[in-house]
Amino acid sequence: MKHITFHLDFISPYAYLAFEKLPQALQGLSYAVDYRPVLFAGMLKHHGQLGPAEIGPKRDWTYRQVLWLAHAHDIPMDLPAAHPFNPLALLRLATACGEAGRINRYVAETVFRHVWRGGAEAADPQRLAQLQQQLGPKRDPASDEVKAELKANTDAAIAAGVFGVPAMTVDGKLFWGFDALPMLRAYLDGDGWFGSAWDDAARRPVGIARAAAR
Image 1 (tube, rainbow, N blue to C red):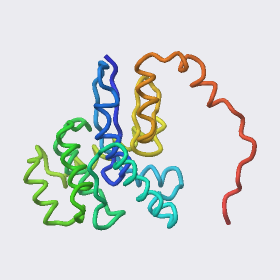
Image 2: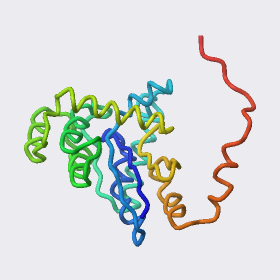
Image 3: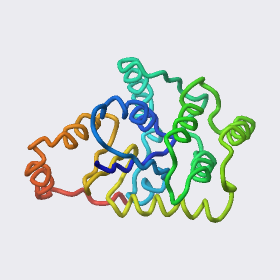
């Protein structure tokens, strides 16, 4: 049995799509999944990047594309009333429902659908209170323990080479994005391509590097 770590942040529409599609994409295989909340903004800061929703034209394309992907794959999806939003309360709530940085699929599904179905404000305090009552976390989401656990998840993901969400790691290999699900499936199926091409692809020399903006 293969063990997959699924790194997620509820702010990401691609993470929602990948989460919903994962069981179907890997149907028939023997695997187990650790779902781990991480702070995508922390990864962006670490790598010195803007998020997709922080670049105007890219933001517009992202929303159009994810709605098309949801339509094409028959995944129910509604954009939240405002996006981006601060996902920390949702991430901490989910983390408080789990243990050792892991959450179960029910918790992840409930929070993802809170955000990406219905078109309401994802961070609305009244809705968050209702969501917390529904999930009944084992720990206080505002506790130092939970905050530290979420940070540890994010730090560990960065150390493992994760730069965005969704990211699925297995056997030291990183698969990023909703569109990586077929590639993940091929690896778990034992596709021979991964014997040499995986490592060879990352050995290209850097031809030119941009200087930092002044």
